[in-house]
Image 1 (cartoon, helix red, strand yellow):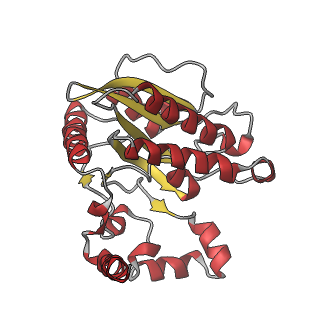
Image 2 (cartoon, helix red, strand yellow):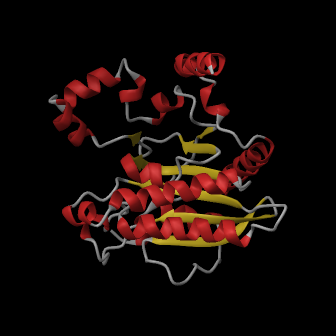
Image 3 (cartoon, one colour):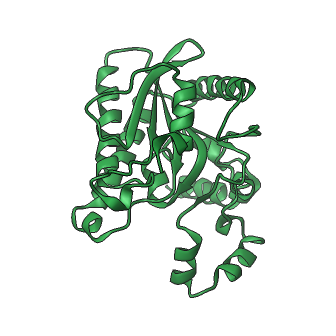
Length: 266
């Protein structure tokens, strides 16, 4: 798979047209500086790299190199803007099929690499950077946790190619000792077990779900729609940097009640 076939690469090019890619990074992490509504913004995508030093991360997975590189880029962005009153927006363009599963990854500490990336995004949010996650393709397992889940606002495309879950169907079937068909039947009545973006929206984690003509070949109208929503998301994130917006859906009612009771008790 080439980088041009990746939705992450496609949308990075659309959102930051003609922008130079940041040098000195591993090829699978692409970073471009552009703007959102006239304000400076940094766009970050993880893309396939067929020549990846770690074969398990050749198809857009987030592995050792990707985790540490994401952490480096986001941390450097925080440091560069430390003395600025107006922090740059950071947009994670998300199309990641999985974390990289392999013996070398486990031996060399993929848990630390991905935790470092997640911590960097959280630190950016807490430092005043509007962090936006734009889900254009898959957002699976530890890859999503490391690249985008810590965002102030999450935006996704209403498309069958957009899937979000803790693990792939085959892996989930093996670990739960069920068939894929049995899992899909359960998912039809238990939204957190589903993979499709429609069920994910009911969990209250998205600030917008966009109908895009063709996510693999976006039109000018598609791009205009995404840019409009990004402007709104950045504005909302600047006004409210917390993640309380994720508790508004009916399927999160119990979570909200638990938090209220914990606050009362403490």
